[in-house]
Amino acid sequence: MASLSIVNDPDLEKKIAEWRRLDKWEDTREEIESLVNTSNIVELRNRLCSRMKFGTAGLRAPMGAGFNRMNDLTIIQSTQGLCTYLIEQFPDVKERGITVGFDARYNSRRFADRVTNTFISKGIKVYLFSHITPTPFVPFAVNKYGCAAGVMITASHNPKQDNGYKVYWNNGAQIIPPIDKGIATNILRQLDPWPGAWDTDAIHSSTLVADPYEQVYLDYMTELGKYSLNRERNAVSSLKFTYTAMHGVGAAFVKRAFAIFSLPEYVPTLEQVEPDPDFPTVSFPNPEEGKSALNLSMATAERNGSSVILANDPDADRLAIAERREDGTWRVFNGNEIGVLLGWWAIESKRRRLRAKGEKMEGSKYALLNSTVSSNMLGAMAKEEGLHHEETLTGFKWMGNRTVQLAKEGKEVIFAYEEAIGFMYGTNVLDKDGVSAAAVAAEMRIELEEQGLSFAKKLEELHQKYGRYVSETAYVICKSPEKIGDIFEEIRRNKTYPIRSVAGGKVVSIRDLTIGYDTSKPPSYKPDLPMDPSSQMITYTMDNNCIFTLRTSGTEPKIKYYVDVWSSNGAHETHEQLVRKIKAFQEEILAIFLKSEENGLLSPPSSP
Image 1 (cartoon, one colour):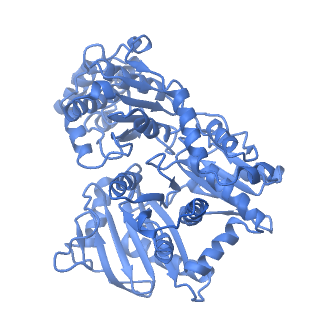
Image 2 (tube, helix red, strand yellow; image 1 turned 45 degrees about the horizontal axis):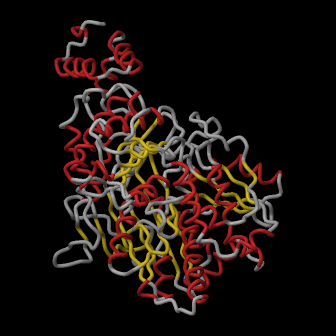
Image 3 (tube, one colour; image 1 turned 90 degrees about the horizontal axis):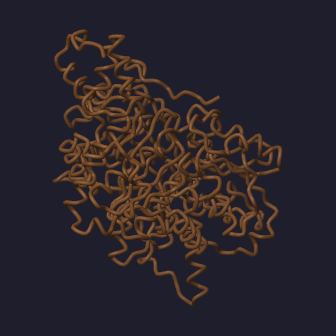
């Protein structure tokens, strides 16, 4: 063990000593010792002098040694905080228990075992999945068993070096404030591992540990099957679907979902169908990246005469769709386009089911939700059809919890979505679910095929009826939180927001949810949506049918900007004209708001 004196930094020396005292996992102990032996002071400070911040998204960070990395010690510390908080909140937590699941990333299974071991050390029952599962299985299990909470070990679509810790509350939805702050406070009070924390052998024999895998798998698929409208038609369809799991967990579950719907068996993208934590064929295992992430699927589809591609992200809670055009090229639909299609199908399906029972669709009873950075088109559809519609803050934590609240008010949410290809069809799972979305989208596409339509043609029909909406999301990379803060402070400039014209349009109103300020709401200027000081988010409404939002990502070093433009139904602006309008706004957002060149902001890299 190297002498601490080589560091010559009392604060860092203290942190190194703390790490040596607390960490008992050999790999990460050796990692810190190697940095000490090579006098890598910068990296030691980076890893040890700050902690990961626990928030509504839980934790997500690179794996490795250090207090701001995902590793065995930080998993133990975080779980001790969560466990303590649950004991405070639920007197019956021992009987209710928690659910624990994990994806196929490196270390996920071991991290799940650490979580389980921590809870059973306090006599709390744990439903620990014995196999990798899609993230939606955890919130489904929380509600099925009446658990106090659920934990999913996953980094979703992040790069291979990352992992994460996602928490669901007792209602089956992701946690929202102030729950996250309560957990975070307790984590800081429970930094020393409890007795037995490093020995997970007990979980294999403990009567407090139950495996929910088979029962949850069966019940989830049974409930999902209730959303199928026409198994007979599905069974005789000749339409071919190509599927990719993006090296994640989804393949077996989507295969079973297809069988439940009597859909034709999908054509797998063989290079990506099996779980592989190295994600060898993509730089970013995120189907939201579009064609760069779907090249292998397109090649598979073309070899097999398939015209539709369905793609999950690695933990199977998101869905991307691509469709082959008549000229042989591929159209990759963005999250708003898929959301509009699935939203229409949810309305149509609910109406048909009610009609079959001799009932009418009472609009006030049924609700559609989308995040505030998503397209306005779903709201236009709901208004036209007389349905209840609401926007929420970004993220399914808000839509899931709002769904619970609306149910208490007598309203049923039939569909919710966010533009980042996350879709909640029905309420079996109060979170985005790529498995159910894949099966439902495939059934919809079969019906459209029977009518001589494609996804693209149906989308055009919907534009003709409800108005033409075009949306695009883009982002730049900034790894300095301080610089991000400076950029947004310059935009708001003490609530003066000096930029008042963009791309030929004038600013009508500005909503800043970071500080809780909305210029369209005098005299209080309080926005309808809740303030969220934990992230940056400013929305501009223009006088030329455009709304755009700038916000930071909660899980990645990105500044995202969302532009939504539209022409009213009956107007004659073409899709191409609206796309050009979006490009004009994007260029000025980069140049005037973000000052991307001056601030050294990086454009997103391309996958091979």
